[in-house]
Length: 144
View 1 (tube, rainbow, N blue to C red):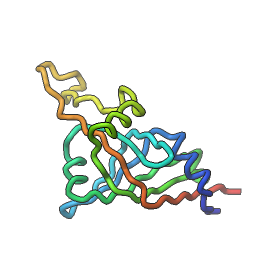
View 2 (view 1 turned 45 degrees about the vertical axis):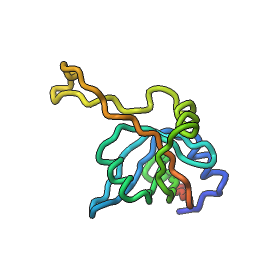
View 3 (view 1 turned 45 degrees about the horizontal axis):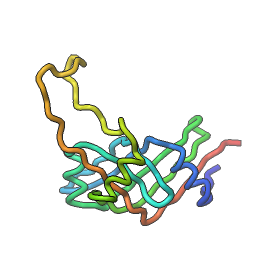
View 4 (view 1 turned 120 degrees about the horizontal axis):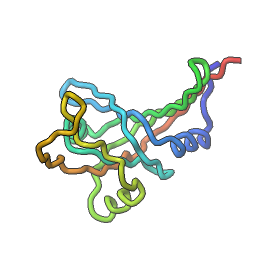
């Protein structure tokens, strides 16, 4: 049976997970990508390298963010957030970087054989961002 999650359970789920999916759309394209994140009770924070996702978010900052807690196909909880993407600078960026900690940005891509690229590659600049939450809803299903 489908149920709505209470605001407290919705916040708990956002606070205890570290992996979600970010959805964005621009120029007739829709992109849903897995991201690591931090929820501080007010906003969602993340960091990534510049690329397709950041280009799309700069064009259209309206986003959807989703996180799941799945035990089985008939026993799960999910939260969907509607929000606005914002790039952080200065003190706000420093706050987010301190909270996110090291190791939250995906490594630079490997060669096709899975080995690290041998030539020295400068990674693209790191972007630290916040998703300002406009709304959030939670649902669950537990088969009885």
